[in-house]
Image (cartoon, rainbow, N blue to C red):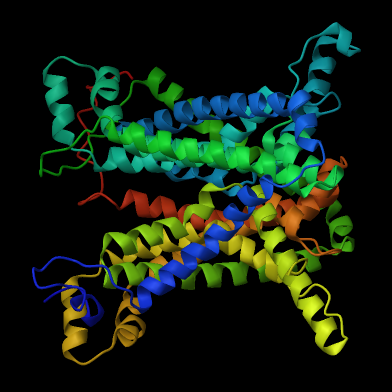
Length: 576
């Protein structure tokens, strides 16, 4: 039975070819796509307005510094995430060494730590008065900075290291999934031809996994473009920092929009490069033979080296901030509670729940619409509706504030003209604007996760529902949603966690005298009061741990007959 419903059957002409027509699902997808396009279009439109000399001032002073620092930061994060993510994914997938099973999921934990929180913790520990330098002075008898050299933490290099430590899980996540799905027979052939594990990695495993690695790096670099807390705390002038400076300090919406347009161009170029890198050279696994993974044992020396290498990013990216924040929270919890901690938790939870619910519903609508109408037009509209995830939060904030401001001013003018009553700001400057921003930014998470779940529902189930007289909506509610409930919950959890961590968009769109855990932690830590906000930072980290563990379990079970082959005899040990 056809996998399409009556709305799609009407789209066939006499020759059996698809013809374009509008139906309810197409209109919904088009509306969502337009909804997401408004902020980006607004930024570009506003950028062509008069800037009162701000643009020429930026070009002659700091624009090239912003652009150069942004490019160098992206280069540093790209190299760091590739090296850490692919190497650790390969080691925990293919080799047996102490702690491998724990590290296989623990390597994802830094994803739960917001980068600005890690920046605060690392600076707190490594600055002149921190524990590391204090210990060095005590051991060697140094009395002042003139007696020794220590690298500057608040720098472009420091920001690249911090961002690499929290963003490498994007590469690790996708690279490990790609390694798990590869055929063991290819590596058997490579070994019989005399190639060792390292040569097999570079000639077989890495080329096969390159599309996945490219996607992971692209996601990490998009998050780098969105970053504000770390680069502001480290005083690194990038395009994102410039948007905040021009808008909030120079009071120029047009100037901010012009900088935001450059950031949008950076993002689009990044997307195009990622697509071209995957299309220019393709690798395919042509065998249908699926075997358990080889689980090569490592010698003692190499096993210790693999353990230390894989444990390092977990220790620096998760354990260090968790332990430091936990120790501070136990001592200074009273100060955090007195600072309206429960109000911040309530604000964060409320916004995150609303954003997760709306994004999940919108994701279900888009994914189900594509399933009912599997046409290129429908798929293109759905993909376009998810572009918000590739646009930095600061850019979306500029694009959302401008149209909402016009809307509120128009309603206020009409109300005063008709009834003589001012309405004030109805949407802009309210929590509703924040939820709108979160949904636009994170709709991709809801759509792609639900779409993946729907792809596992067999067409015969839809056929049975149709023969029993169920409408598409009734089939969705009674048949599909119960089957894809885990995917819907995962989508909601991912949006919930990202909303809890989101900083740039929240700083710009939040109402006056309204703080979330993210803004509370950022403001206190920026004022060198990390101890007083430690409990709030620890709460944000804890909120991201459960989804990370769920993702790790999903990856581990993604291979048919998941597990490992019987290990080679203990006499056969291999190097790396």
